[in-house]
Image (cartoon, rainbow over all chains, first blue to last red; front, side, top):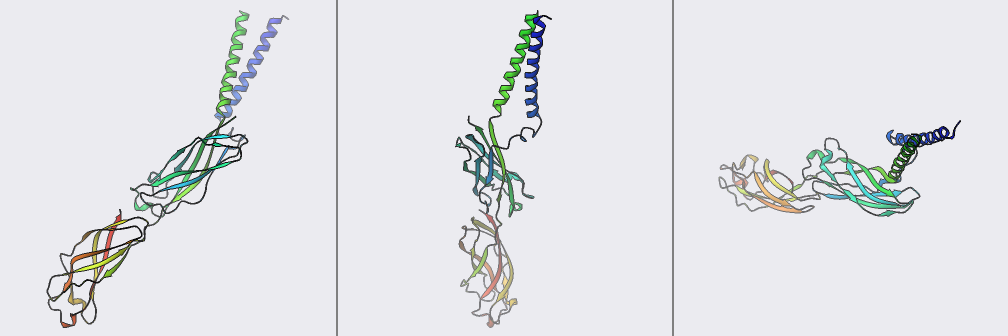
Length: 144
Length: 153
């Protein structure tokens, strides 16, 4: 038994452990939901109030409440509303914007962001009396 | 040779560690999603009300004008561009047969009605008295049903 082979074995084991750890984390990223199961979303996104009475050309704002559920501050980056088709009225008839911001949300605090939406003037009669469902999304970055 | 192998192994291990650190840093993003909704309204019909006009009609004479006012209950302005005619009528004992719709009555107009407001209009040369209308048609009021069409301005 010489020292060199033992050292080589130790180095190989260390490398294997490091490689294994890296692979495990990469696997967690690659498998959808595997990371989400461990962490709930940092930002909770809800709509406050109702937006009604839209007609061709009218712009309204959707009040979106973004809450930081974590124990660290978050720098908010954007809040987006993406409409889905309302029956025979295509989703493209409702223009929804993205609000970019740099607001810092302290832990457990919330902020209301107003996202503009507009029913296009080209909206056909099929868009009367419809409700567009909006997929709301907020992005940000946790501060250390 | 042995030295070379160890250096390679350590370098590989360091590279993996750095890659892992990079991935961990990227996970500091904070996102969230939710659902909302936005609803459209429904267009409401405009109300057309007859307005009296002194047409000075007489049997076989030129057709007279018809006046009206329109109320728009919608939150947006409307432009009326088309008109069509329905039933004719006369007050008193003057018969409906004594009332005639002019063949040259206008079928188009251009009338803007403000949001939640009212506008008045006049259509020239719409109704007249038939040539054989009797004395019972003197001093009476003739009427015609109007149907106006248009769209949001």
